[in-house]
Image (tube, rainbow, N blue to C red; front, side, top):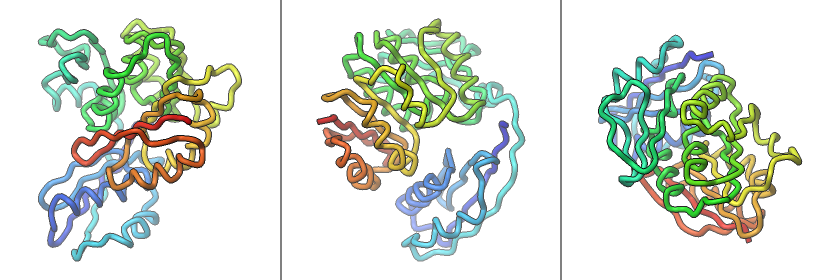
Length: 284
């Protein structure tokens, strides 16, 4: 399925960026994937199959700002997201002058050491989100040569592909959504990295004995999924290995670290972009 619910949340009055950032964070906790904030509120997107209107009021019950929140929902039918991307994003993404991410329809592509072709067949996961940029930066900084990498919630496969390009191996990418999984398979083919092992499943797939423990474990998902599955993540990371987590706000870092520490994961540092965060942990 490729349909989305577009929920428009208007704040009256709108207190500013802090309020819209918090609103987006609360909505991410109940499955919303992408957000467009403005000076009046937030437009948020969630897959139809993940949408539960009864979950919204409890999620916003503790919203601390003194304003009235109104909501309007519309259904966006599945479409050719490649065409949408072509209409809405006219330039490739360049990360740290080392990596360029573009689609097959781009013609004026900057030269970079790592050239990744992504043709998204979904609304999101194109690489434009701050969390994806943070994770790409982390992978560009890391020593990946000969290192085993697991990419949990791979989406379009963009992070797994960069890891493979930088010499990581074996690379295992896991994705729960069937549509995203198929897209990742196609994108790995486009980039000539058929050696990446793609698995359709959730975190329980990590229990398989034939998945090599990771030297570097990456997950760009959301706070609730990460905290729920952190034990399985840690169990599949070698001692001294690195875990890179993103998909949450800077304010969520204490929650993530509290869930990670009982499993021997110690925080090393964080990177922040537009209030989104990438947390680096080391397994003791």
